[in-house]
Image (cartoon, rainbow, N blue to C red; front, top):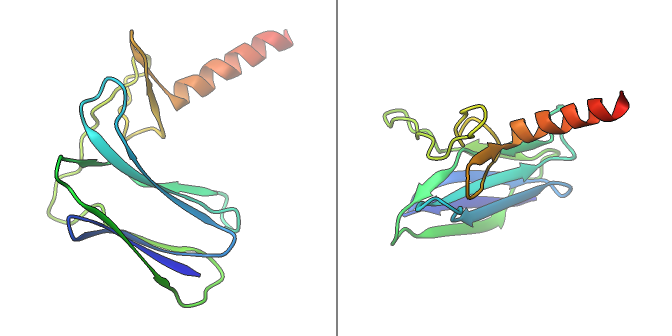
Length: 140
């Protein structure tokens, strides 16, 4: 088992002891139509006994000059992945959404993904709804 410690500007952002059959991803991104730069972590947990097979952190927005450091160490053996999220310190306000779905109005912190287009944005939940409507129409 490997322990991942992720730091932003020397402040612990998250740590995870990742089991052999699980996966942890860290992505730094700049979305189309958004001036901000962000980072998100996702854990894929096929070995999890719970129904939720992935865990997605809220976006952490970055500024020019920010430093990201990932420290890898051996973790104590455990059967399942253990994750500690350090993104919501007690005395800090919650981050606000910066992108919103043009259809339902939900922000990027309320859904898994907001896809930006030239004329508007759409979230993964609206895409799933559209897909289910199309599938229902096909069956009629």
